[in-house]
Image (cartoon, rainbow, N blue to C red; front, side, top):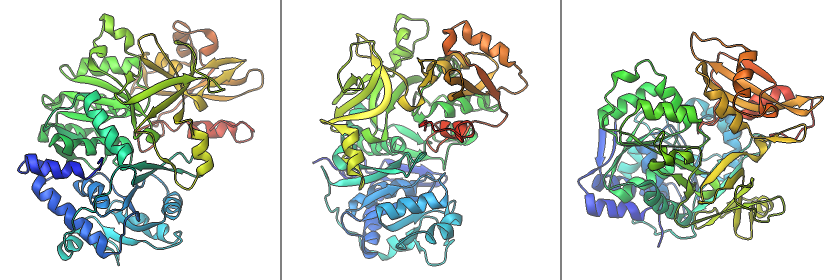
Length: 520
């Protein structure tokens, strides 16, 4: 049976004295960890949690979050991770939509609790994850575990629902992605093979755990009998410090996070010798940034991971050997990799028909990792999963070697004067200019062309470049119709989602307020 909790039973059996988690001064062996999970699950049951009941969690990364990832399914419940960057009305909507009976929360998020609770239809029971009770009637997790009777694993698995991850919501209500034990556990095993994990690795959990990619890294650890170390959230100095202190050898980051890490003035002060592998994903990484990262982190293997929440999430991997600069294999550097074992890829046109290699179309995916559907949204599920294939909404093409090249989110494609412009391609060119710290390319309305290519750029500190110079830089590398026709410089970092993706809908909003465009 494929079950998320089976892995921690095995970890305690084969490496019981090894450390499961480390955070600050707190650390637990696998034997201790399983005992905590059994007590945590017993506490949930004492609060009335039954199989299939939903349990929300609103918290920063921590070893207690890691415990919840296993305690909730141990008790038979369904975990609902909540994005810590959302506003109270958005969080309340997701609690209402999923029908959470219990909410796990930490001190960093408790200030939002009154505004959330005044909007919920049925007040959930609240468990406070930290040592101190920062909210009146919250149950302290440590007291809950201490007063509860350990329970046996209820044995949920296979097609039983394990988690609901909310995604989207920029142009309407967010949708809950239903992932089963089979979906998640399959993707864990696929990822271990595709990403080359080894036994007893020390993995730094810096990506947000409310994102399924962060959770994937956590679920991989017990299968390895390895150790998870935690920082509450991505903060460059904290990440560098944790790598040095805990001798972490692997982590997963979004490209924007890698950029922030490399540009830290303190970067050279930290001993990063333990770091052996950096996995990146969640959004396209400009080639200039990849090259800089490889140069600044010699001896570190780089792997690209492409996927989406609906696929649990991993779909393709670009292995380290294709990151060797100035070698024949580097011709694949801009690819997202090949399908991982157990996953089928297909590129289709607007009618769902397969297209030839090299032709851009919609990326579709089939495998045991594909979601069950959207929570209480059967029509949207039927539109997204057709004939067993997940329609990702991403545009891309396959080459003759089966490498996937992701050109853009289909909704981010710019149609200017009848020509299709993929924003990721333009962003890649702009990022090569030495004055550019980060950029995003979006469509804005244009009376003549319908839409025009517009670049939003943040420059490096103490560097200057004019709009004309940046356009000339682009014309040297790409066709004129792809080049930005307007440039906006800003001093503040670009707005990011909790997963580290640039929120292009926020950048587009001022330009499309008075328009009827369906751009989202």
